Image (cartoon, rainbow, N blue to C red; front, side, top):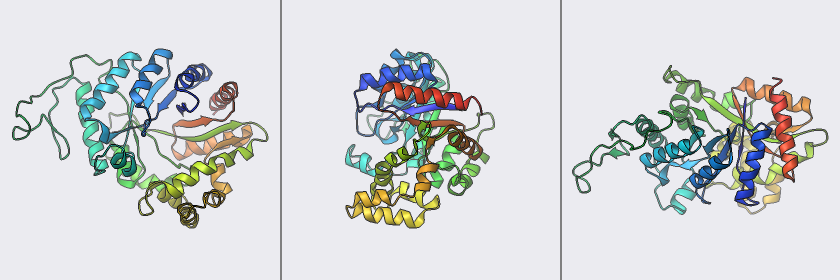
Length: 348
């Protein structure tokens, strides 16, 4: 199992990258660089490339509506070059609040768009002249549009690799099916080992049946917060505000992907209750309504025996790589947790 974590630069971006370099020495394999509506991810990824030696640098995620497919491919190829082949292109649809509210672009047909983007990116990396006549992207632009002067072009530079791994953050049935068919890695949210089959099993199986047999098996990233040791169980409650935000307040009442996943994971009544409370403004009550059982299942917090059991459960459910956050008030504490997790993983 590879170990990955999301870059958090709440305490300062340069300090966060310096910590990634230390985590790399402690056993970290992959760092996900977020974007949302903060600083752009590629700038950070290039900076990480210059300050690390072996960690995979993944966008986590680049929203597909904010860049052309060709630019996504160029960006990944550039970071792959700077990092000597350590880039992973993480893609996702984000959500209508960000895409329409911050970028001013209609949030439409995300699954079909990602499918075309993946095809175009791989064409660019193979240094083929880009020719794509899809429903959402036409490259070159047809003669009856624009100036009519467009012609097929291939990327000037020779990419380090003719295929850069593509990870997709997906939740819904259609998008998970497409991920299992086309992507190299999957980044789910609100993943519990016990509910994975019920929530995503059919979609993963349908997509896997269509997968190119020459492509490696899908890498699946999931895990949770890591705090390995005696007496840490109370730290599970630190996840309540974030979980309540996503389950109760992310998106509109009628379109909240996270609420849907939580309900399908065995908590339909709690999903409705949390959303009602959160949207009514009672955030504390929404947080309190999150079941203790759920918090335990979605974290790696507890003594070594408990955490090892959770790792086995994750692996048995199909998780191949861990996506975690290391608990700790100081860098030394977070590094210690990374080392503890690496040691446990190596015993599986």
